[in-house]
Length: 319
Image (tube, rainbow, N blue to C red):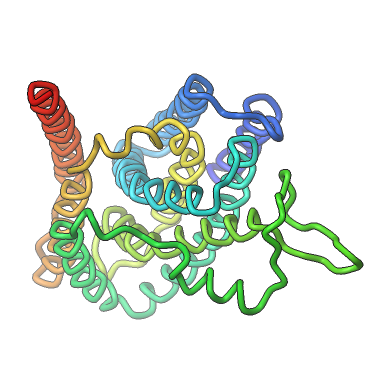
């Protein structure tokens, strides 16, 4: 029953988003992006309330914890998305559809990854300890990562592969992903953008999926319940579907959250340690995990805004 309601809500929301909130070749303004972001956040919170009533407070708390984690990790995705769109000089009128298709592809791949991951963990629960060590490594790497190390789309393996294997054209796409010229079919740069968006999300999923699984699963040697699987899928999908509007809302303000990556890094290390502690039969409550995530993310955002304000004031005084 819960799965049926979840699927109906997602389909209805996509129809509303596509039919009413988004139109082809239309520029998405900050105001419209704010409305769309609010729409997906309210819908996600409504599903949280539904799980609280229909299932239990524990299931609902697992969902909102996983959703917050996925939502915060999405900001890292957005930073890379901005670089991809800038590199390919995607027009405002084409950006919305390209993002939508890229995100829908990302959802398909995530569903497959989650299914495979759940099956592997159920068969070989020790993999969770490997994931724990991986998250600790990723967290430390992210914490000390130099902000100057930018992502360069032209150096990515996906870009080089597409250039080598497919027939591409640099002609103006005008909203098209495929064009025909002199009897031959060519993929436009807009197609390249869509593929790179989906590929980028897959890379981020290597961190986010183990993180969410750890938050949802009670302990490594206990099989996943139907509720666990529902929470993992729903938190991932709701967070990804909100990426598009969040992109248009935050693309001019990503630099204002310069310390968010440190906040996310601390959370990743915490979750990695949590996963390894379970080997010693030490289990951390989902409520504690939720509190840690909120404190780390809010502290990082507040500190980022404080530093941005101070640096702006200093710059103004120097002038």
